[in-house]
Amino acid sequence: MFEKAFESILWNSRLVVYAAVVASLLASLGLFYMTVVDVYDTLVHLTHYAFLSDAEQDTLRADTIAHVVAAVDGFLLAIVMLIFSFGIYELFISEINNAKGAHGSNMLVITSLDDLKDRLAKVIIMILIVLFFEHAIHIRPHGVMELMYYGVGIAFVSFALYLLHKAYEGHPPVTDQSAIDHH
Image 1 (tube, one colour):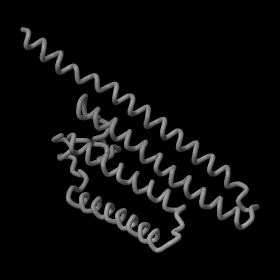
Image 2 (image 1 turned 180 degrees about the vertical axis):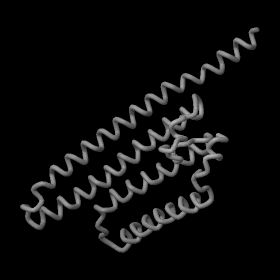
Image 3 (image 1 turned 90 degrees about the vertical axis):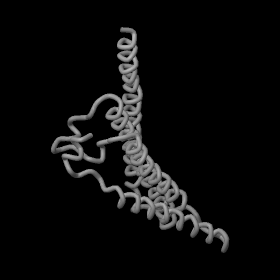
Image 4 (image 1 turned 120 degrees about the vertical axis):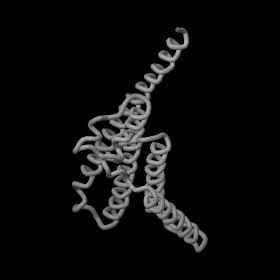
């Protein structure tokens, strides 16, 4: 009797994950909202671009590229929170039935903690690459060593992308509905 009641309490304690699901979803929505507003503000600043001097256009162009790259970063982080929200919901609460329909995305079907970690790691690496690019566009090497560091940074980014590609080749996304149904 005690064991059955204890197991029931223990099993239902997983529902505390709802707090993480809702918080992650709200964080994702907040990040999407902030990034959309930032993109809008960036576009508003471009309305007078044609009337600027060449030097002012160069400055605005560099700033705009940095803002657009930051927006990509914001969207990627929002996606991380969204994937995390879906993943922990599917792992601890219930499968998302809509994700398995004709309009669902296999990318959001999470089958294990390792699967969730893998997907999050890939997006986080992309965020880091975008951050590198965001800062690299403002770098103007002033010597051979700085130019070499810049090249090494680019080589590391390229290697990270290569590793991501190789990891993806080894584990193609689930496309077979029967494989999803076994989840």
